[in-house]
Length: 265
Image (cartoon, rainbow, N blue to C red; front, top):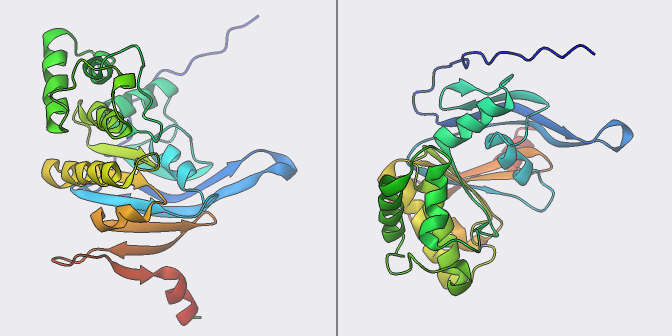
């Protein structure tokens, strides 16, 4: 039996991105095959910039989780282009995509995804271990970030001894400990009460504004709106509206693309 030739990893293709840290262009995603296939995304284009907290909002089944997975290089688009920090992802091998994620991205999940047998410090430190940073340097950096998110006195606590809000803050610390340029959050407040939900959103806004990171949160939680610099609306696999907070205002200015399309026929 002849062995299938393995493609040698090529140098990633570069493109010019001055402010854009992550961009999708005309992305289409078809899920399933044949008669049962569904077009989850129908030509989505938008970009993220450093220093902004962007919310991706839409009803259940609108395509927001699929889009987040594509932007996080977990799913590949059926067609269209994804560009991460100047690197076009089309044609990259799985290990190349994994390296792109390790280098540029931090992920926050609704269910926290903490290891129950590891302390808060160890849960954060593991994100550095997989990036080759170990020992005292990793422990010191992990402690520093946990203190930044207000958990300096909970370093040695296991997840079972932490509240939901504290567990999510550990997850936030784990996402940012390697100083990624992009932070992607999937429903970060869905499992939290009002007080902890606001605390987590304040953290995400601070990460974007004070650290110059590009932060995207998929959410259906209206409590998050006041923290956003921009809200992107998705319905039926299409971007249908965008709301951006003007300088000095407390609420985003609404630009409804659906109404605009109807007004122009």
